[in-house]
Length: 214
Image 1 (cartoon, one colour):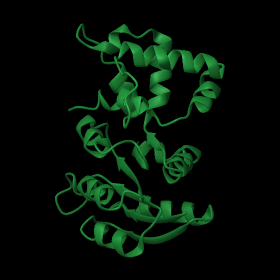
Image 2 (tube, helix red, strand yellow):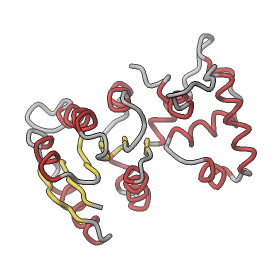
Image 3 (tube, helix red, strand yellow):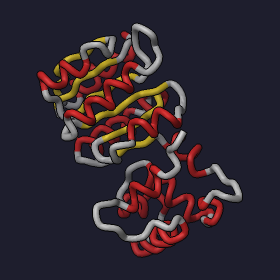
Image 4 (cartoon, helix red, strand yellow):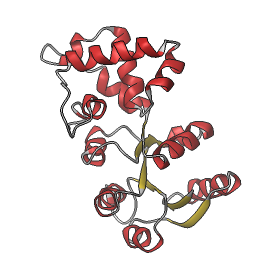
C-alpha cells in the first residue's frame, strides 16, 4: 500500500519507514509535524495515513485534527492515529464519522510488529483497528444506568473483540468459538443495547460508538 507518515519522534518515524519498506509498501512522505499533512495527502493520495495525535508546535491534538479533516475531505483514504495514552475523547472525535478505514492504536502496540501491520491491512481493506486497551476501558465501564451492565462476561468479551474491528470469523478464531455462537452472542449484545435493525446504520459500529462519548 502507499503510506504517508507524520510522527515527530525521529526514531519511531524512521523505524516505521524502514519496516513498511521492508514489507513491500511505498512510503510517499514522512515528516515530523502535522501542518502540511492535509495538503500532502490531498496532493499524493495515499492509501493510508499514519499520524501521531500530538505533534509540534503545541503538542496537543494537531495530528488528530488533521486526521479528522482528512476523513472528511478524503473518506476513501485510511487513517491510523497513534497515541501515547488512551484518550476516550480523541477516539470519539476520530470515529464520529463511522468506523470505516480508521484506526486508533497506542504507540506501545507499534512494537508488536505483526499487530501493527495487521491493523494497517484492516484499515486499507475498509475496516477498523481500535487498540484493545481503548476498547477495554469502554466496555468495563459499568453503572446502574449503563446498558453494558446487562451483558454477560462472554458477551462483553465478544464485544471487546468486535470493537477492535474484527469480523465474526476472526472473533470466532480468537475466542475459540463457533461462528454460529459468535452470531448468537452478537445478536444478544445488539438486543440488550437496544440496537435494532435500521436501514442506513451499522449495529456493529453503533455498539461501539455509543460508548465513545467523552
